[in-house]
Length: 395
Ligand code: FSX
Ligand code: SF4
Ligand code: F3S
Image (cartoon, protein in one colour):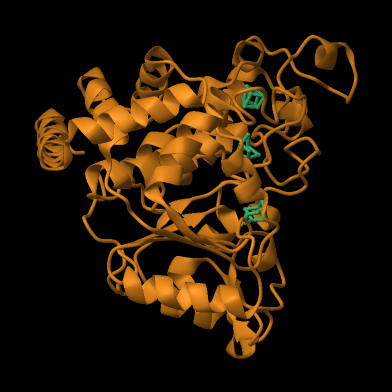
């Protein structure tokens, strides 16, 4: 957003949009049915409101949205989701299944109907293919397509074949996204290619946007935390539009600040207290992991705020530096992951290397992240959210 007026107009349009949808969809029976299901699953109305309030804050929406999100989540339309797995490890689905309030989010997604999910479906083989065909035909132009995994593009995409007919991942992704209303790339692989695209990238793996030349909302991370996936999906379900993104097409509410900005070890960074060796006194005291290779100052993501596995822990909390897994090309550009940053080619100026003071490091980091920050500065002149994300775009 360029200024307060634009921000106001943006929120106002979201608000009137959601009010209009609530008015159109509202029925007492639907709402009661939803609350009955919550109760049956052991959740009180208060638990649900707490969840709605958490998601509102996570999506960086003003508190005026809380009650609307609660209402809209309870009476939402059924929106089919077709969820494909391409070249990846399935860690993104694993992370998604461990949502913060698993059963509330799961309940909501149950109700929106996950029509096709490669991993979670019981059926296999030909039956699955038929099911996919039917889903595409029946919900054409209405479904959300979620893609996990990169798309190998070299030699006609032969390095990834899926299903009983050996269809290439490229072909499958193309035909499913062609009829989707929104396309979401969950994980760094689907967003930017991920590990498959690491040098020398023998299969020509690319992120979905680049491989297919279509509009996609990227939700990177290897894996992304569940709040980012659930929030992005919720945003589309509730507002019928994609959230504003940065220039890498990542939702700004989730990727608008750095890991370093909200890190629980940040006070130690500022005080110049660093872990110097694995297992040393500093490590035991929870000091900053910058000298052990932490890429938190270079990485835009919100793991330091929301963590993983229902908010239990996250990489830096567990004692390892952030490896920058939500940034494009992180396998190549952020490695080596566990070496002090000067060995990773992230050098502190003035020849002081790791002996530099926190201030000097801070100044350097600010310089080193200038490019990334520029992406955000420009990106936050918000790439407007859209009501349709699958239309072709020029690469
Ligand atoms: Fe990639 Fe996701 Fe890393 Fe794994 O599906 S982002 S390898 S956690 O599983 O795509
Ligand atoms: Fe946290 Fe890493 Fe920043 Fe240190 S460098 S404060 S561990 S994000
Ligand atoms: Fe990835 Fe760093 Fe979060 S490594 S999981 S972006 S803390």
